[in-house]
Image (cartoon, rainbow, N blue to C red; front, side):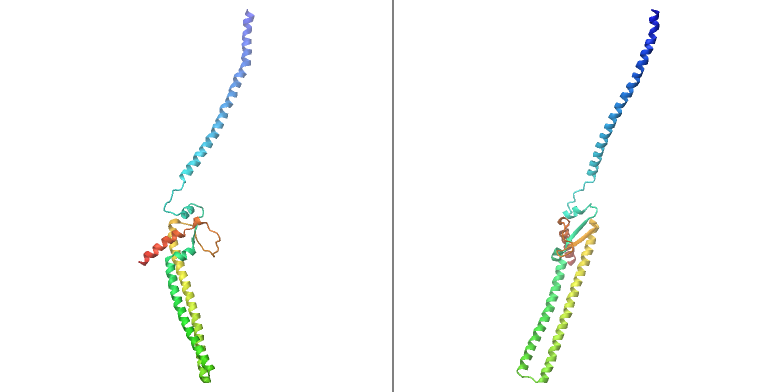
Length: 235
């Protein structure tokens, strides 16, 4: 009995020596599990957070509806480079200021052309009459020379008058275009203080711009505003 009792501590020690490593290995195995779960949760959390941030930014940066702006103005606002254009053909036809200038110019042209036509018809009549008198030997040679020189002088004067009137009309046309350019540019500068476009371009059928997006056309808006301003100034 004493030998058996004396051997028990050794068995206990041996058993303890065998089991101790097992108690140390279990925490090592269980320690990996929380670390693996934490990594997946972190990744999912970051993905959800990124989605919320993007959604938040989209909501904050969403453009408000601007009812007072036409489609062209709405489409151009907020871009890195905002560009709109005017249809110059429509502007020349519908801008009241241009129409009035054109009417004044046409009246002047018609008056000068009528004057030239009257002088030309008178010269042709006198020339035909002179030719008949010469053929009929109704005037002397000396008198015919005098009449011929007078007719040549009238013809030269008529040619010079045509050139002078042509230059006059050209100058008036250039002056009208300059006034139009100055008036339109001044108006657009005031207009652009509100909308702040980078470029307001001019488009016409025979111009250098071959294709233009209709959504960037602000001609109607400009015509309404500039005609209203012109008519108010005439009052």
